[in-house]
Length: 327
Image (cartoon, rainbow, N blue to C red; front, side, top):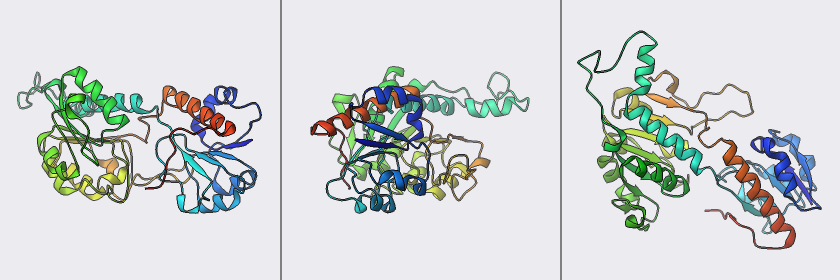
């Protein structure tokens, strides 16, 4: 069984992954390779491991049985180009790493540590101790957290927020989760998104990106979040309307944001790339990170284990885990 691995994030775990594969497996590593450089190796590959799979790749992959992304998102896989016998699977293990990012940025932004850092670099001591025009701030325990999406990431982040003493509510696609079982005040469907924004201090976005969720958070929701509200997006950039987000930050419609997922990405590693059409880098009330909240050793060690286990199941003719079907 030939396995073509193109995801660079798995390279540090190569030895671990290969040790767990079936004895008849042959691996070909092409971390970070472009589509054109993968076509020859795809012709006799039974398994492809990578985030992107195009129609051109599907046309070359005559023996393909499994596409395994090394993460949760399958939005870069062209399902329409796949034959009926090709499976697509994903994996997770990122929830703890991303939850730590969510908690950390919530504290940084609610306590004004980002603004204080930037002020102190200019010699300004921006705290009520040295400037009586600056109010004292509460702890995160005083905050109410709202989740847009409450899957692996939202639930793990909520565990951390609960430990701090926060209260919370959530909006999900179905709105059917048991709020009491999770210690939330309520769970509703997307018709309650405006209500969620109005009543929370921190809004955590981790919903999946679909045609229905694209732009689900726009001007109305950000204005409802309010001038003291903080937005944290660890789902996908286009869940939040780009211009609405930029204007909300510029105009003070919300207090601050932490954004780990964007509107534009590099076409190849090392290529300088703006994150969108608008100059987010000029904003002082924004934490910007390069889709790195889930990039940890813990995340990709667990993903390597999952991928190897699923390839083993494929070889034995067993049912795979985390099989994804197109929406």
